[in-house]
Image (cartoon, rainbow, N blue to C red; front, side, top):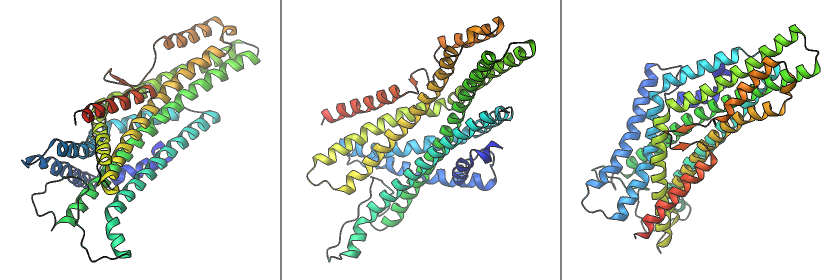
Length: 392
């Protein structure tokens, strides 16, 4: 099974939050409901702050900047759970494609792209763990300093984000802080687990495009080096047909994935751009105050960095799929297809004809996964931030 061979790290991450599509036991469902409850209540108790009649425009921005960031976690968590069966079917289809591979070089290509997917998973998981540790240490920093250099003056305790639990926050400060930290940890786990799974899957489709390029090169090289007879001609024609077929399957698998998660991606883009703009405003607002400190500016800074990193990773993977598809056609252009028999040339021309329509991974016809789209989203976020900042 490819899930055990190529998606083992993703399996562990998704199992930890109860979303592994191949295993949905009663315990997994209970874990999902429990984690979703913690995440939902953390968002809810941020929005309940609006019930307080004494709030200003600055406090509204502060509430929304953190609440919308946590909403990104919930969007990812819920939509992936809804599409868990779809993810399972896509993995089964990928397994079917891999079962047809016979060539050692093709298996080597699969191993290479599987290694790339695992590198992305390890890197993003490490980053998330470091982010969680940094935020927790920042919250406990005053207590750590107090232990090392004790002072007689008691310091006021302050929550990192604005919330309203309808209880005495000073009395239940530790429990509230534990709840918020638990929600952030669960959210980061959901974001990384689901995100790396989608990245790994698309990385494997890139491997299929690479295999298609390899088959075309191999078939045309054989035509050049060997005397063309009926037997060899038939074998080469079959190999080119296989190249065209695996190219088609790679396009279908990648398009299907984006199509099934299109609603999730659209919600993430809209919420992410707004959250990024508000958190940028938070950073500049804190930096402009004379009483600024690292505790206040750390959280919005981490939120901004995570939003930008996630936008970049999503668009980079989309750009990578497009580049691999284009490489197939570059390969066709470069090989000596014109010396092949006429019906082989017709098949190659059919493949070239596909290049007249650019293959991209788009969301709702508005956003296309590319580095250009990443720059556009960041530019839009900065523009919205500038408008908000100019009104102050």
